Image 1 (cartoon, one colour):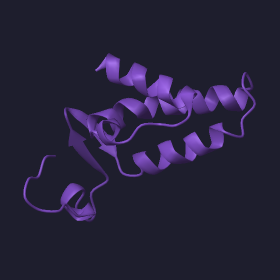
Image 2 (cartoon, helix red, strand yellow):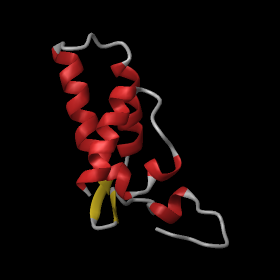
Image 3 (cartoon, helix red, strand yellow):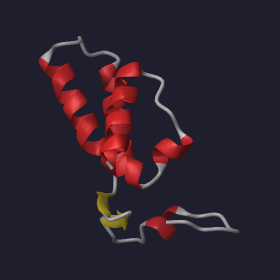
Length: 94
């Protein structure tokens, strides 16, 4: 969604009652950004190589292409190097 000359509200992106929206040919469910952030925060506390760590990386990997489709990584960069690698792979896969 590209809007020039005015601000965008959440309901412009996802109207009340809608569960998903399509961006750049990618169907994205509401809550995707919040899920990515929650998993990214949890990654800081996960022991590298642990099952939890692998699950978090897998979740981030599955969500990153959707966030790339909405353009999130064109305006924000992850600080965590592991997440940056996941994001980079998602961007190059597009």
